[in-house]
Amino acid sequence: MSEWISVEDRLPEIAEWSGNRVLVYTEEGSIHTGRYEGEVAGDWVDLYNDSGEITHWMPLPEKPLGEEQ
Image (cartoon, rainbow, N blue to C red; front, side, top):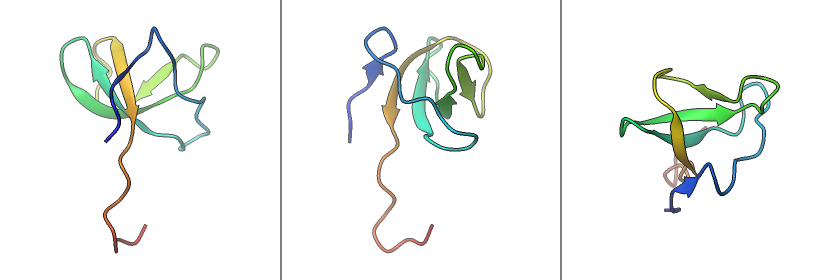
C-alpha cells in the first residue's frame, strides 16, 4: 500500500465530479474517502465527515482480484 502524503508536500489531481477518490486523514485522527476539487471549487470534499482539516492523503488501494466494479 502507498504511504501517506502530506497536503503540504503534494495534493492529488483535481477530481472530476465523482472521480479520483483518495483516502484522507484528518487532524482528529479519522480516515475517510474524499476527493480534491481544487481551490476554486472549495478544496476537499470529504464524503463522510466534514469536520477537521485534512492533513494527509493516499491513493485508494486496488480492488480485490476477481471483484467486479
